[in-house]
Structure formats: C-alpha cells, structure tokens
Length: 234
Image (tube, rainbow, N blue to C red):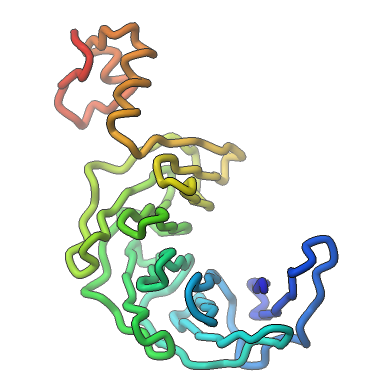
C-alpha cells in the first residue's frame, strides 16, 4: 500500500501489489483536510502516519485490499515539514519549520508521545531519514545535513558539525540498506552520496590526497571548523 498526499490536503491510498497497475483504494480519506508534508509506514504492524503542516500527526490502520481507517492522532506545536519512521517501528521523527526535529515514541502507535524536547537543527527541516539500525538519523535543512545518534532516544545528540554541499534546500534523505551510505537530493538539482563509516571516509580522503593531507587540503576536503588532524600523514 502507498499513500499520496499534497498541499491541497488530499490523502489517498493506493494498492501497489502490482506496481505496473496501481489501483486507488476508495476516494480521498475524509479525515484529512490540511496540507500533508510527510508520510511514513511502519515495517512492523499495520500503521501508516501522515503529518500536517500545522502540527497534527494522523494514524491510519491498514488492511489488505481496503482503504486505511483513521486510528488516532497526535497534536504537536511544531509546524511539520517532514516525517520518518525508523525500521524497527519504535521511533518516528518530525522535522519542522521551527528549525527543530522532534522524536516520537511509537510503542503505542495510536497515541504516540513526544520524547524529550524538540532539538535545534539550525535551519528549517525539509527532510529526515533513519538508517537501517534505527540508531542513526539524518536531517536536511538549507544547504546542510546533520547526523544524530538515536541509540538512546531520550538522549539523542548531534554527531559533530553539519555537512554542507547542496546549494539550497536538502529535500530528500535516504540511507543505503547497510547504513554506511547516505543519499541526499537537493533543490539545486543534484544528488550527493555521503559516507557514514569513518574508516571508509578516511580511506577515500587519503586516496584522494595522495596520502599527504596538507592544511590546505584539509580545508578543501574536510572543514575549517575542525582542528587540523590528518588521518594519513602530513
């Protein structure tokens, strides 16, 4: 099953068991009226989630061959622009126009609760995504991507500094199945690949710089904001 939603507030469900011939499951879902800015499904359990721009997260229960049924909702103060559910279906995250992300406990899917306070990102959050183990989260804002450690959700913290590269909004984030690669799509029309494995990253850096990373190369390949500490010699 797939959900389709948009700025007009319409939300429809599609049977995609035959990808070449998707079929609508009924008409517009009647409980949805406001602009939809995020949709996600649990991999374990019959639930779908839709997030409205003005802060409401709606819960839908699915069954084979039938349109989803409204099953609950959570009202947030966050103006929501993005939504993701981790692969274990234990966590959700919303990204907002208030420059924050908010984690949600899905242990009771129909009445999810916020975990801690919203976390500041440093820009409007247009995209979010979890790695396959659910312990790594990415958020995308204007020209930057931030990685988060969610292994202990109540103590979620950012990994290092934001990474930059896109000119404009980062609109899509997706991890590879093993979680060692992050794929981002931007408003600038580019797709970028990012290594999330430090060992592999250092190997690529050292190969690219001929195993001699000077301060100038450190500035070009890494960041002026990080102290010069070359992993492969000077």
